[in-house]
Length: 316
Image (cartoon, rainbow, N blue to C red; front, side):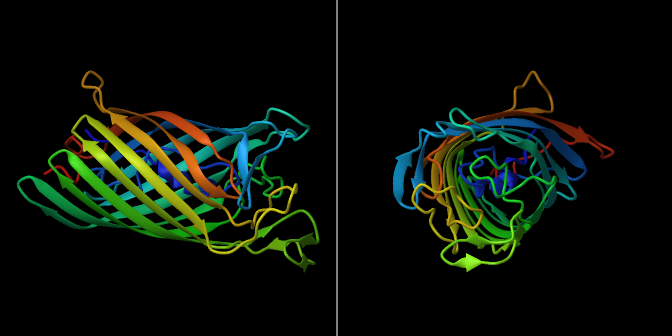
């Protein structure tokens, strides 16, 4: 049994000021569900920071103290075929500050839907290599405001992404690399003029696109997967936060994270997968130096005539 939860489909949230999605990975791994199998479950995430980068200047702010973001997400992965999977995520997000007068926000953030295709696969006696292509979209699920950072639960921008992924496995050791381009739609804010590096007499904010790259390596067994992760988010444009000012949706938001991810399938709980992990920001620009952790539980439903066990697409 191999359950791919849809954690990294919250990547849109990684661009939200001071919240990176340190979730388990589905659109970032080389695993697929079998045809007519649905893996679905919930994942809890916790993210907090008290230091942040104002442009390139690392600092604290006693007026806000520690910013904490929590989320509970319904996630799923359905096998249209053994090579094509459909993934979705629906997160509910809470934010709060430990000091000052800024009020925390809560609500449904951005729903995500994506397709994952195992485009090429070669297996030898002790090694395997695969290529994947992915495409997805996300859109706000509620009328939250993006113009209240860092307390906003998201950026309220409709987005689309395409990703290429390559995976090599030898024995139980594997290494996976991927890169994606994210196209983001403009957003509307509740004011008729605003200043970035110049004055804008409109309520529409032009959102820069972004690149995302991910590298992961570790042990991949039939019941246990342990992997070290590193990822980089790069915004293609935007501007820095002005000194002592609040952040703005179209700021340049760059972030580098390192982390550890676990996925375990207990033999005494058939069709159940447990996930856990965490990340820490090691470099950034206009982002919080956040430490995040998550845990989730997922169950596989079989809708085919025979309840075939799910498989790791890369196990030689």
